[in-house]
Amino acid sequence: MKKQLILLLLIIFTSSIYSQTISETDTIPDGWDTDGKITLLINQSAFLNWQPGGDNSFAGNLDLNYDFNYKKGVWSLDNKLLTVYGLTNTEDDGLRKSSDRFELNSILGKKWKKNWNFSVFMNFRTQFTDGYDYNDDFVGNNEDFPIAGLFKPAYWSFGPGFYWKKSKNFNVNLSPLTAKFTFIIDEIFTINDDDENNVYYESSNEFETFGVAPGDSVLFEFGLNIRTYYKFDLMKNISMENIFSIYSNYLDKPQNIDIDYTMNLVMKINDVFSTNLTIQTVYDDNAYSGFQVREVFGLGVNYNF
Image 1 (tube, rainbow, N blue to C red):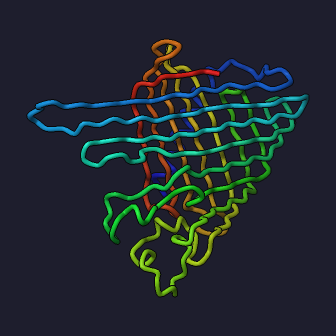
Image 2: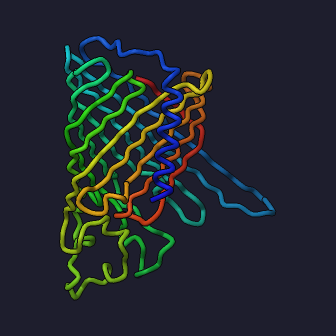
Image 3: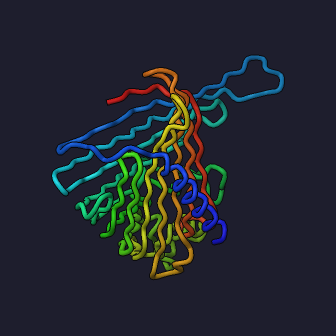
C-alpha cells in the first residue's frame, strides 16, 4: 500500500508542475474532432556463426490510438480507443503473442464553470485472443489452459462525477460513485470447486480467477475512480503521453488501490518513422499480488488520420 501511495503522489506532483507550463485552452469548435494514429512497431535480431550465442527473433506490434470527440454548446463527448496486438517469433519457441489490449474510454460532460464539467464516464477493457503462461507447467500442455483471452476477463466501469478539462491534452475525471464489473465468460475459469473434473482449478491460483469466485462469472465492485490524461512535448520532436487511473473498491479492502499507468514516449524521426517506447504498470490484487509491468521499444512506422 505504501508503494502505491508514493507512486500516486509522485505522479500528481509531476503533473502539477507541468500543468503550470500549459497555456493551451479548450478552443475546439462545435462538431466532431477526430485524431488517430496506427503504428507498426518492429524489432528484430539475427545471428550467424555468432560464438557467444543468440536466438534469431522477430517481433511486431500493431497499435491503434484513436480519439473521436464531439462538442455542441455545453455538451461534450470525449472518446479514446486504444488497441495493441503483438506477436514474436523465435527459432526455439516459434510464434507467440507478446501484447494484447483493447480499451475504450468515453466521458460525457456538461459544462459547469470554466474548466469544470458534470460528467458520466465509461471504460471497457479486454483482450483479443487467448494468452498462456509458458513458464508454468502445472498441467500438461500450457496451450490447453489459457490464463487470459477475449472476455477472460473483461472489465466494464461507469459512473457519474466531475470532469476537469484544461485542454484535449490535459484532463482529469473524478467519479466517486463508480460501478465496476469483471466478466469471465469461460467455464475453465468459472468451474465450481465441487466439480470432480476440476483438474485445472485445483492446479491454478488466484491469478486465473481475477477476483471472480469459483462457479461465478461476474464480480461486482463499487468505489472511487480517478482518471488522468496528460500529453506534452519533452522537447522538439519528442512527446510523452501519460494515461493514469486509480480505483478503490468501497465494498472490499478499499485501502488496496488498483493502479493502471501507461506512458507512451514518441521520438519522431519524420512523418512516417519514429522510435517508440511504451511502459505500462498495473497493480490489481484481484489479478496478481504485485506490480505487473509491460515494456515495448522499437522502430515505429506510423500512419496518421
